[in-house]
Length: 115
Image (cartoon, rainbow, N blue to C red; front, side, top):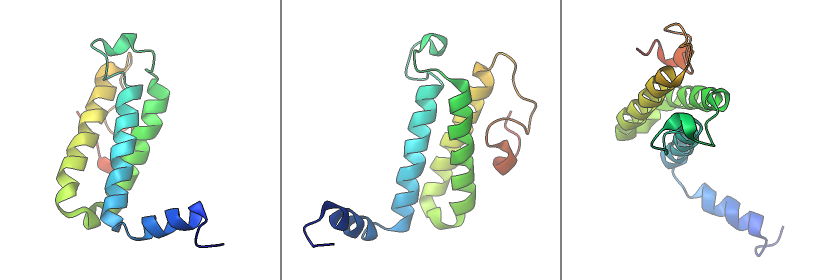
């Protein structure tokens, strides 16, 4: 590949980003997507056209796995990311017509029960 190829440039740029920033950005993207799928950007989440609890479950579980697996590297970012995750888990529980049993909600196999 030549030095002018866009992929080379993207890889080089990504290689310069510290791992904690890549992990944090990924977590924020998962959080944002989960919040949208929970309908949290709407005054009445139940009426959001983007609400999809099945999709939200997947995103929250992926977020929980990412945070749990990388918590030792996150330093001061760990607390806020865990708080955001827990807020999404609680919003999922509150938004479910039939809430999961404690310990069986999205991501709870990684984080433990969220009440």
